[in-house]
Every structure is written in C-alpha cells, then in structure tokens.
Image 1: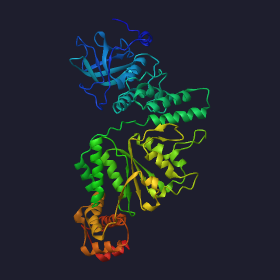
Image 2: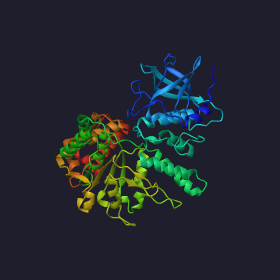
Image 3: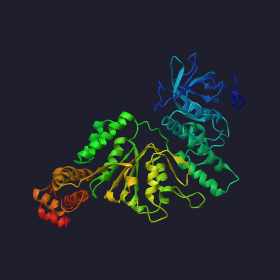
Image 4: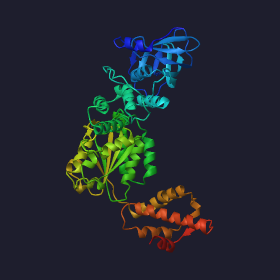
Amino acid sequence: MPVFDFNQQKKDAVKAEKTYELVYSNERETSTDHPIMILKDEKGVLKHHSDGQFTAPTKGTAFIYEGEEQSSHDIIQIDARFENLVKWLGESHIMVRLSGKSMDKGYAVYKILETGVAVRGSKLSGENGFLQFMIGRLLQSDAPSETEVDLDEIEDADDMRLTSIQSITDYITCAGSTLPDNIRLWARRNLAVAKSSEVTPEERRHAQRALSIMLNIQWKNTDFQPIDPDEARRILDEELYGLDNVKQRIIETIIQINRTHTLPAYGILLIGPAGTGKSQIAYAVAKILRMSWTTLEMSSINDPEQLTGSSRIYANAKPGLIMEAFANAESSNLVFIINELDKASSGKGNGNPADVLLTLLDNLGFTDNYVECNIPTTGVYPIATANNKEDISAPLMSRFAVIELPDYSLDEKRVIFTKFALPKVLKRIGLRSEEIIISDEALDAIMDIFKNTSGIRDIEQAAEHIAANALYRIEVDKLESVTYDAAMIKALLS
C-alpha cells in the first residue's frame, strides 16, 4: 500500500502551478450538474459515498480514497469558491466522506461531510458543524475574482463560532476570497492586530470583536432575483385594506426590480397620521422582497454616535445601531425601516442624526467608528415613516419616493374592523366567529367612540378588548356565544 507524505506534498506544492480548472460559479445549490468539484476516476473506483482525505489543492492535488485499496484521484475541476476550503481540509488532515456520482468528466462531488482527523493532536474549528457552516456560506457567496491570491496559512483550531481567533482565521482562509475586496483586506489587518503581542490586550479584544461582527454577516450580491407580482399583491391585500395607490406604487417597485435585478435608487417614505398602517406596509414590503429587516426608532436617537458607534480608543467602545442592525440580520441585504423620520433632525448631542442617515441612504457605503471599515450599502432598501413631512429636511426628503397616506373614513374603519381586525384576533386566540356576535348598533357604537381618532390602531385594540371579554364570558360563565349590543360596547370601551 503506497504511503502519502502530506507534509512533503504541502511543501512541494507551494511553488507548483495549478493544473485543475477553476469554475467561477454563483450557483446557490450543489448537484451533479453544479458540483463542488470533479475528481479524476478513470477506473470507476469512487462510490456514492467515498471516505478519504484531501491533499492541498495545488499541483498534484488529490483526494486519497481509503477504500479496499487506497487510491489517489486528482482534482480536475473545482468551484473557485471552495478552493481554499479544500486546501484547509487537506492541511488540517481532516477525514471526509464525499457524496458524488460518476459522470463523463469524472466523479462529480456535491456534498462533503467530515468524519474525523487523520493526525493526532490536530484541532478543528468545530468539527462537522463548522464545515457545513462554511459550505453554506460559500454557496451564498459570489465567485471570487479570477486574480485572487491565497491567504495566510492557519494555526491551531478552536470552536465553530466565529468568535475565537482560530475560527476567524479559518474562515478568512476558507472564504476570504468571496468577501468584498475592502473587507477582505480589512479582515487581514485586524486579524494581525488580534494576534499581535505588540499591542495592548484592549486593542486585541476590540479587533477580535470587530472581526466577529463583520465575518458573521453574509456579504451577499445585489443581483436580486425576480419576485412574483401576483404573490406580492396577495400579501398586500392580506395585510392592508384599501390603500390602492400605495399598493400600486409597491407593485411598480417590484416590476422595476424584476427588470433591473437591482433595488431602486430611492427608498420609500410613508407619510400619514399615526395608526394608518405605515409600519405594517414596511413589514409587508420586507416580506415581499424576502429580505431581513431591522428598525431604527429615530425618536429615541438624540446623538449621531448612537448610529455611528464609538472609537476603539475607548475601553467601553461599541458599534453603533446601524452596524448592529447588519450584525443582527447577519446579512448585507436588508430592509431598513426608519420610524419617525421627522424626528431625525432634532439631535440634542454633538451633531445631527439626520447627517448620519444621509451617508446610509446615498449608497456610497457606511463607516462605523468602531468597526472602521466601509460597509457596502447597495443591498440596503430604506423604508421610512413620518407623521409630518414639514419636519423633514430637504436633503432627507430627496432620498425617498414619497407616498402620502390619507386617514381612513368611518366606512373604511367599519370594514377594517369587521373584515380584518376582529377575524385576525379571533383566529389568534382560538375563538370561532359564531361565538361572538356584534350587532349593527354595537358596531355603530364602536365607530362613534373612535370617530375622532386617526388611523386604525384604536379599533384594532378595541377588537382585541372585545374578543378577550367574549372569551372570558364563554370560559367563566359557560356561555355558547356572546352577543354585544350598543350598551355593552359603551360599558366595555368607555
């Protein structure tokens, strides 16, 4: 049985010319048609499940199959996103099981699972969990540049989460080529700081925390896939009553995305009285776009530093709310819902929070004072809400397509209460429609109580109150149903 010296192969491979073909793919799922790699297998030795170990993917790169007889199978083609991951698997002496199928070109590998470590004393970044995490991340990434070079080699391993120095190092090694150029260079510089013995422990801690924040974000492309306008309309009709002009504008935006595969240059600014469903519209758009979403409550922000973060020179430094939003969403593509934009100009600290928003909205990138790296914002879709457009500065207004929402009429509120608000509450708390009966006079009483209120929030709360009261009566008084008249409604809601 031949003996393979992996360490010698690694040394010999450093100056070797690559002989396998790199495929620059953006496929999000692997299959035999879109494999991770293709191995040379002229004799048909490799099976559906093949156990073995990789050598480093340079000249002579191979998968060493540990079958009945050990055999070497060169990589003849590999998805460029996975090149460094396979190198890491080989250098870390990680035993793997390949799932694949024999094709005309060779053995097409579409799945890799870890089965152990070949060399005693070797550590991993979290065993198979880390490997599957990496494969998932790489599949959601774009192909690296064809001029990309390899990154530094790795050291000892730690745990799976991207919080330890080693898991961060492994991630940069395996997926660094798929990161945006400026973030890849930033990560390498910060990793050097985090490992350095020439800086203070505080500086190392901040560098490690910043790396963890940035690398746990999935840096996605901004080539947005088509959205079904009919499905979008169904979601809007399910969430909102009326507001046909608003729905039309949103559907127009969907059509534009389908044609250009990019987000519109301007976000949406929803202006209207309190309670008219502005935030609900924003959430519906995020659902339609199939994007993560986050909210910024401008009424609670009175200092720009809350948005931009604080410098690492301070011991208690931390990232700002915008950077935290990216981190919590774990995605560079997300809907930013900016509530009460008309409060953004009332800063009470060392500047105006509105100025920070301008940098976020201009699609030129955003820099957080703590992270100290320019964050691409081309995948950010802002949706803002406000009560009074007069309180919004002209520069901010110019960054949005403005949609004004009128208040609802009493007739519209009546329909919303009976067809939307009350049925939704009944479904949530498990009441059948026949268990609660509201007479026409009772409905008139509800409308009369809330005739001078703006929006529909009050009637939604009324539906909640009435349904809870009905449930109480049914459970405690053992009633089959509860019928409300005007007097009962006035006693309950007044």
